[in-house]
Length: 93
Image (tube, rainbow, N blue to C red; front, side):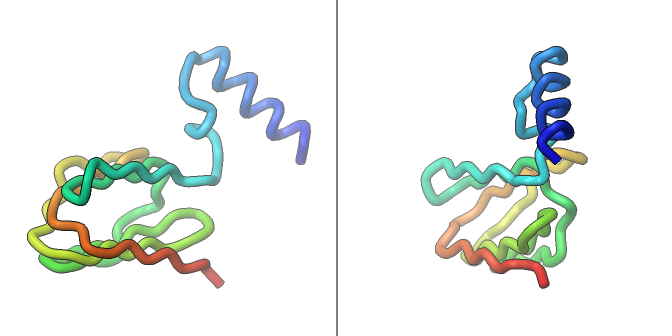
């Protein structure tokens, strides 16, 4: 497994992209309590006015609050705007 991780790291360096782009880990960033950016997601499980569910390789993320809107979504990023009150992480079984 170590050789594979070294290959990922070298490839990311050669392509001049973040190392996380080839990782199974997700990256979550918040801008206050109004915007959340999740990188390396596997899709949306719930999309409602008061909650958004995002799945990643290793866990599920549930964002609770109000007035949610998906600002952007692609194969790598999802950006959610709204009034964020709570973020719950749960391990996949």
